[in-house]
Image (cartoon, rainbow over the protein chains, first blue to last red):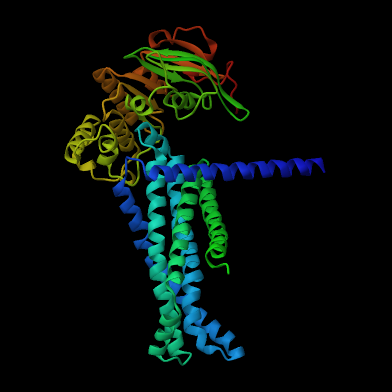
Length: 258
Length: 248
């Protein structure tokens, strides 16, 4: 019994210490965003890697999500003669929830893993120590461009994903469910509000921040060897995914609580 | 002058440094030898501030390195890492000129590139290497690029961490000769850690042997072979029998 209590206490203490360390790292990273030197070239490279190169995966995910959502809403709505709500519910579902969450999870898989593996490899091959000896702060040079780029790029990806997701619903609605193309678009436009879209973009910025932060954090703490980098990569993806889902709930409570 | 006074460093239960006292005079080339896991790399990292000692003091020209202004302090150093530690995402010339492209020592890009090409030539690499990426280079070429990076900003103090590890004997000889030449012509203070005795004889003015977290023997390289210390003799002759336990 005492052993169990000791183990629980130790686990809790380590968890709280971990949360504190991540919070301090986040504060340090955000603080560095506003202090020179600024690494503009690295920021542009990361915007291209995180934003531009993620477009295909985010677009495809949104397209299929929108298409499946239209089918589900149509099938569910048919139980109480509400098939007509498909365009509006697809639009609201995509922009408020599925667009940002699916984009966030895809970015966690594609970008979070890549950041953790890259920085983890730099850690175990002493490239991060080399940065320090070359008078360059690794947080400023590695973490800030990635975190800033992800915070800026993911909302843009969410916006594109929203449009493609709604188009996926429209394609299924018009080709499989018998909706008139113009009426579908009109219904979407009539029911969709600016805040539906804006709230999803804010979520995207938060998710992008979390993914890049977790990638940098776990990469910089990577243990030695290929196994260490592998563990860091896995931890970055898992923690990003959990944080995205938790943050999504909290933001939804904050934005839409009646 | 670099001076270490009673430096201790532990990682959990593992007490790596247990009171290291050492002096490196300005312009001197000191080689630190010792078995694997005796804390040679940790010693360098403590001096550079990459690791914080648990106890003791490290002084650079009489000033405690923990209190020195970080950027100015690091600007005095160059370091060649064991694996080269070249940045994979940058071409060779940008690796060499890294410090010249950023921070207070920043130069125009063309000038930084010219200096990088000049430093590459100094380590025996042609200008055609400048635009390659580190992954396209052999181990020996990576070491040379690392050496070029270490000397690019003309540092006063250069650290070499296992400079010949993983290289064939001929390439090891080339790197040893380059280090000796460069240190002499720059008048730099050099600290090298290695267990390659050919490096010791080629590079060192003085030798310090680390064992059990302390400096076991310290003296001019010319006196090393005749020194009566049984630990030193076992190490430099690579004997399995002796006071240093070996695992078979």
